Image (cartoon, one colour):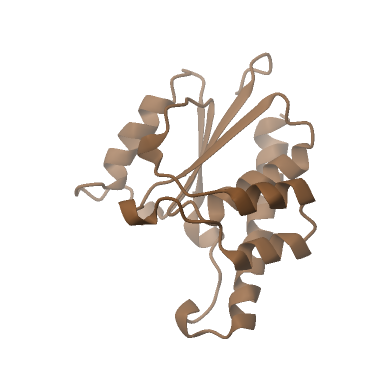
Length: 178
């Protein structure tokens, strides 16, 4: 259980830090409204160096705009640039990791196992919590995003944003406000 007398520091991790973690962060901030006692940092777990600095996908921005995300959070999302988890120097008392569970125990360079060790190092609080969200629970259901029409791509991002909003609601109710 998170100590209510301490500032809540949340780290949100996903693969590329250009959609899932930024959007989930925005929905949590949207639901909390008063985030003076909340710090959220986000990062990508499976990024190459050439993927650092990318912006949030435009379709994701369009989807959360239509879904009613507050304007200041849309602005924050549009200014976001992706970073690798290895560049994080902050700690957290809550880590939310959107991942593919079947890959967690793969032993290879830059594997999830190595990344779990990194997560353990940044979870300095002995009471820190780790929430694992199955990546499939936030993914769109479409045939192949590369061969989809622009409307299908937009619909896929809107579906994904709706799932992330649901996860934000669950996290706020069961962890942040418990």
